[in-house]
Image (cartoon, rainbow, N blue to C red):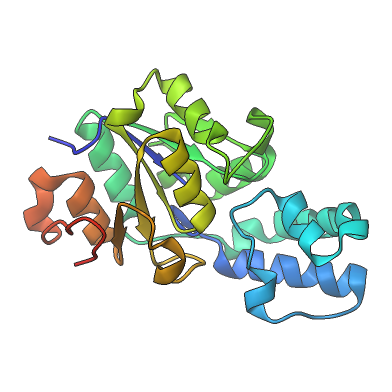
Amino acid sequence: MPRFGTVLFDLDGTVVDTRELIRQSHRHAVTTVLGRDMPDDELLANVGRPLVEQMGAFDADRADELLQAQRQWNHAHTAELIAPYPGVDQLLADLKAAGCRTGVVTSKAGPTVQLAFHALPQVAQHIDVLVAVEDTPVHKPAPDPVLKGLQLLGAAADAACYVGDAPFDIASGRDAGVATVGVTWGFFPRQAIADADVVVDTVAALHAYLLPGMASAAGAAPEKGEAP
């Protein structure tokens, strides 16, 4: 039996590997619009929040210009640079086979998500609902997008979890009343997501935690607050 009847996922850095895509897209924006470069830790510090807020952190007065430059480059290079995390498509398939409802809750705009889904149909086919940035008036780290995902699926918070790689994900899920799972293969280090109920280091460990009945194929499930 699955541990939760409903599993919601962040997208970037959790379900799909967009680290290089986003790094290069952000760098293109700041060099094109602002004429300067930034180290990776500054470029990626706010990944997980709405894109306009990320661009505003670079220059509040030129956020719209930065947004347009970032989005144009990102869309043009999505198919080239996006990749699935190995094992995630099988995890999603196994969750669905076990009767779980699944959703993606992301700060991306819907059309940008659809580009990702088009590039990775093996991931998209297992997702029941999508909550994008335009679907709630406020977004992560507020609980609203996670609550929207629960509403769309008719799911109760106490039977659901939210999986993400960013501190904004963990805060959103916690305040929505769902269990939270932090993953370390995305944009943020373990210490940034230490507030999650569980932190895992591999897709196999996530599989084992979410589907404990299948743990023998993926290793033992981690204890609360620990990774295997």
